[in-house]
Figure 1: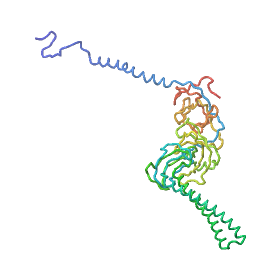
Figure 2: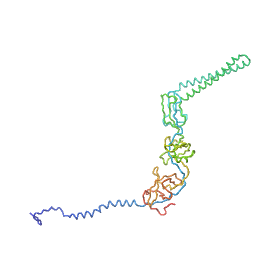
Figure 3: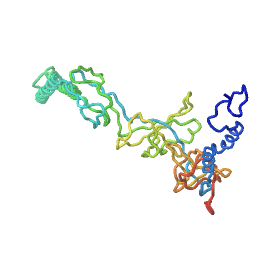
Figure 4: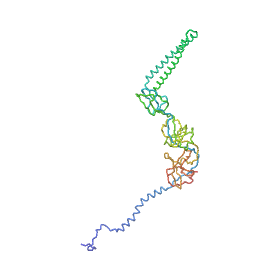
Length: 383
């Protein structure tokens, strides 16, 4: 049965709602598309505006100052004295008195050997000396008596010569016995192995029960009361270094650590072929034992004066061992890596990385950054 308005043979899809032409739907989508993207596009624009915001700073021009010309050199520490202490006598070790890392004074006992046999020999040598001294004294009395008898013609010349010979022989016998006593006394003393100087025990190589010979190593000892700084100086700077010059140094990696002071004692007489440098040695007192042999150091040696650009201390930013300043270039800030010297009052000389006359930020704030636009405050250029 045909519905009203339908023609014969015509098919129509059932309608679930009001028909919406395709062209109308496309137009509606295109109209709302720009509005959907506005929310995301606004964020980068706001960030760009914030990044472009100028930073209010005070600028100061780097000015020239007279500063010491300083050589920065690297080196290492070695002990002023270092020894592999030998036994000095043969025997069995009965006791040791130090461990690795022990600090000992000069003359302290490091180890002790079995001294029973040597002690008996020393006692015998002492007795021999006393016996021969008594015999020599008696021989001297006999000689004096013989002299008087010979002067009176009471004895023959042959008896007189024999008595005189015995008198002289007794004197030399005493000398020989005293020498033997000295040898045995030294041998007895050598059974106590002592420190030849004050220092730290780096290593102990014997223990109780071992047998040692005269040349057997017992302990390795290094003097840490006085250390030597061994540094290398490039060939071009060697003429500037002289014996007796003062040198300052810190342990390697310590920018703000304690500064130690030494005096150059030795300048190498030749340049090494491979590295084209010379060895320079300085000495210093290490009373507090803060430093140890083998440590690396960074040394500074003043060899004259030079003109350098300088900036206020507040214009330099420390980043570990690095130093930065912010230079105003074309209306923007440039993060400049510089090599700074020792502070002179409130100024810091710049060895490299900055020229005199360049303007830097006088006081660094968290807003100061590389590439930031500069907003120089009214009258905020320091002269």
